Length: 220
Image (cartoon, rainbow, N blue to C red; front, side, top):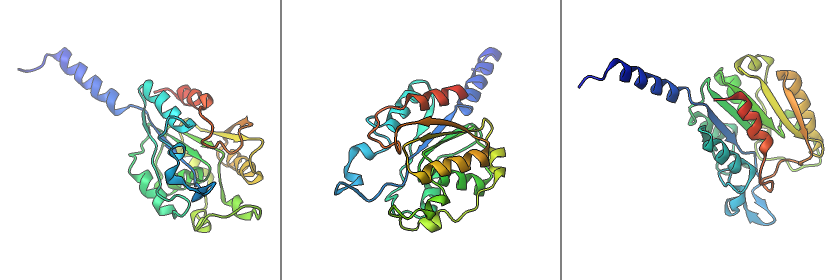
């Protein structure tokens, strides 16, 4: 039986709504291999999909509101070269209706991916962002392959790929290199900066309502 004109129009409308659904990618940072002698993979709270940390909690809150949310996992992130971060991002189907959210080192991974792919997105949110400025710090343990990870030169043209601009969350009590990185990205991307006192936004933080609010401002 041939659908009526009204049913056909409704079907097209539903298809278009599905295709235009906002996708949110929440990408974790570069964890050290162990914390307090325990392997990261053996600590459930360090899983970015776990609702008992702020990233997994944000995922649940957004899914309740109809967003498609993906929290990719980069295996052995402390040791991972950039290509391994890129491989996970390539799987996400990032498009013009995607909001990208990065934590720490993954902020740079997102920006590098954007620069190399030339893909347009809806919104970028950087949380406690890492950058090549961290290579200049001498009072912290560098990650393996960190120099290779930060070797891509970011340019201001990336700003043109981000439809609704960039927001940066950064803490006054985070490392100096992170605060300097936030300042650099603010100038490079003409970003809005929101200040906190939450250190390096570790997954010991259970909720982050400010992030959900920032995403909801963009809408679906």
